[in-house]
Image (cartoon, rainbow, N blue to C red; front, side):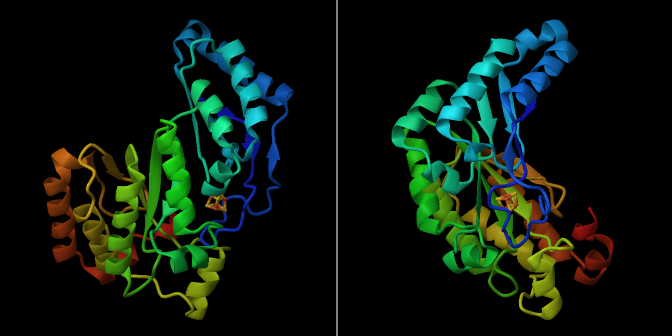
Amino acid sequence: MLLPVTEGCSHNACRFCSMYHGVKFRILSDEEISAWLEEIREAYGYFSEKIRRVYLVGADPFAISAKRLEKIIALTKNFLPNIEVVTMYAAVRNIMSKTDANLIRLRDLGVNDLYVGVECGLDDVLKFLNKGNTVADIRAQCGRLNDFGIRHMDMLMLGTAGKGRGVECGIASAQLVNELKPDTILINTMTAFPETKLADDVKSGKFVPAGEKEILTEEKIFLENLDLPETYFWAAHAMDSVRIAGVIGESREKMLQTLQHAIDTIDEEHFAKTFRREHI
Ligand code: SF4
């Protein structure tokens, strides 16, 4: 069940993102959140008692202080008493802003399955993307989640290093993610959406995007180098040209074959004309 708690993004500066341009970050008031909860309870009726998971939405819910999140969770449980898991996006900088005691308290209240935007395992690329954190920060903060038994799903983005660096990026990202030990890996492919700094960089030639073969090769190298047999690998986002998914230990070979087939057979020119990510 999706529950809006924030509007906009407190960072609002990633080079590839135009999602919240012009939207001022704010946390919804208790009254606004209660109104949403009331609406949800009415819409679900009897079934609202069966809701076990709530997904806090808005770009940046983990930017909310631990104290306020506690209050929001308590409010949610007033309306939906059987909630077990409270999940949301959690930027690395927002995990960093929580003390160990905060994380433990939030975990005990049901906060789990956090979505973390890792994107890439190369520091210079993270800097270029303006993510606001380093590889060491990611390692440290996901390590804290692991220490406190908070599961996380790590989001990786293909093509972030640009033309000619796909293999390097695939290997570095796999090395990092092996240390992070996520429950699930979610793959997306970077897109130069209009009105982003990235689109300007592509236009000016400052950033040269990788072709599709290179993007798929990066994904293949990444998947080959993962040492996480229990982890679920999901690469079926609308931005991913080849949609694959499965538990790594069970489905890796099949997924690699699918990627290799695409690499061997893709007609880059035809693909570029027919799969326009920025229009999806
Ligand atoms: S990618 Fe996420 S963190 Fe970055 S600006 Fe967009 S919404 Fe904010």
